[in-house]
Length: 126
Image 1 (cartoon, rainbow, N blue to C red):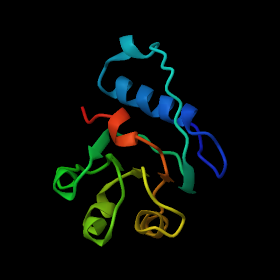
Image 2 (image 1 turned 90 degrees about the vertical axis):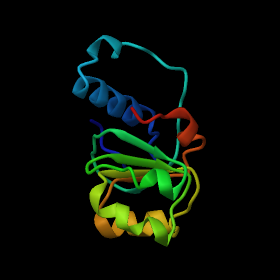
Image 3 (image 1 turned 120 degrees about the vertical axis):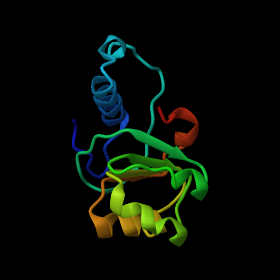
Image 4 (image 1 turned 30 degrees about the horizontal axis):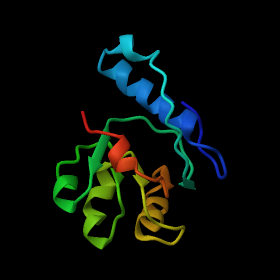
């Protein structure tokens, strides 16, 4: 895994996260698949994390989140707060350094990347 720090592109990090998931699922045969998709975002809280992606476009979908998953969503608000203690990381499409997701992620020490355009359309929960 690669450490995500301020200003870094997350392309390598996302690839490593995907490889970790493929290894966990015993799908190593897919690890050499290359993608032309390059994602970028703003790191909010540093850290190294691995886990299954949980894509949740609504709070109802987020209620299916399992402990240790990485939550990928459009944004969060106070209604999402009960989910933060069980996730390993957060990726949002919308938000700034003072948005709800950013502030709560820092409070919990969760690795968090915000402003990742189209993340909920690119990633899928397995």
